[in-house]
Image (cartoon, rainbow over all chains, first blue to last red; front, side, top):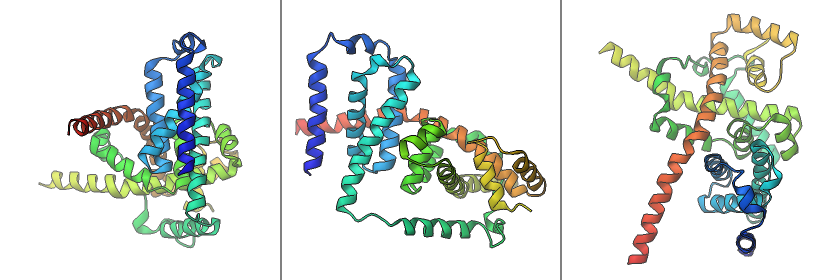
Length: 229
Length: 79
């Protein structure tokens, strides 16, 4: 409780400071930031924060604070990509704060559990020789691809993302949504390169499994029926 | 001989790093014989492009949610 009060006052401090200096660097530097770019950046950040915090209000707060903090210094960023990296590194710390606080409240899952969970998942996909179980063999996604951009598809995609373990979701988003380079992610999350690659591999295995089961398989079954009738 | 577990790991890794010559060769050989892993490889590319599209779709959903929020909060003030 006291923690959320603290972060709230930080946000207020920032906005007051911004308000007090309307003619400072901010107004000039604001012109450097394209509103379309800023809008896209913000929605990426919200998605990123929501996926990790699983709480819309806390996610919005974290994004607001990270953006306010970053925009104060926006003048020092010559490139949008540098700004993006900076903003997300601030956001990452905000999220880490919230998560650390939660972990103090709720006991966190042990590392051993995580490895066990992954082992169970791999055993469900591959047999003891490391080959696909017959029922798990990936199919071709080429058929119903055309209909993929529908609103319904994105809801399925959303659900699959939310089904990822938290760490996998975070790393996958940093890599594929925010398009950070591997080195940047390793640096920010203190991971080794091989750690990162394992996490991405596991996230991709899960995501494709979920998409295939809840979208592509049902879609191809449906189109099969249509062809028959 | 490379198995599917190893092949899928390389198919994910090749989005992150250039594969070594030996890795490329054993992967190629495995893929020639394994349709499931060929499909998996195709899905890796699809997953990457879908993710990039997904990141861009957020704007719309957010706007819809915000307008809903303002409506509900306005309703609250009225009552």
